[in-house]
Image 1 (spheres, rainbow, N blue to C red):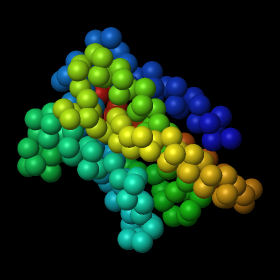
Image 2 (image 1 turned 180 degrees about the vertical axis):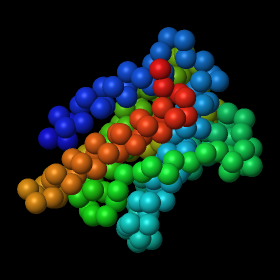
Image 3 (image 1 turned 30 degrees about the horizontal axis):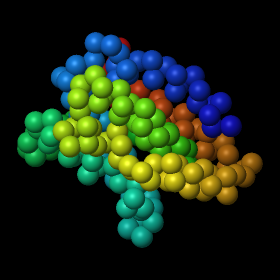
Length: 186
């Protein structure tokens, strides 16, 4: 259901992201990682605020990898702290909405497996020189995706499914709007 409901947004965003574009260069890649940080950092804080300290899964942390990549791409701590961050984030007021947000973010992490190979081939960027985020879960990517799908299936309920779909669509919309505003989309 989520895949169908978000298919148009997913395809549109995928087509507009220059990560697979033949003319992708290191400067564009750096701007994309800066933009990703600007979206993921406040979204991760919002998720952690919703879940509380005990509910946040340390295995699903993406900000340390983004910070490592930004440093590897030449940014100082001061420059990273000065990066703009997204204020237009999806509403997160229920577990059903959390699942919708996570569907998009965890799906993007799964898609990072394909992107990591493209970036390595085209730009010679790997986990140690600016590409860790694209393989943030490493060998655990498949397992963590399957674990998420199990949680999603366990929460399947007609009273809450629309909230999950709405949150997934809103996450795509917020992310695309943010990337559009940063000027990294084609």
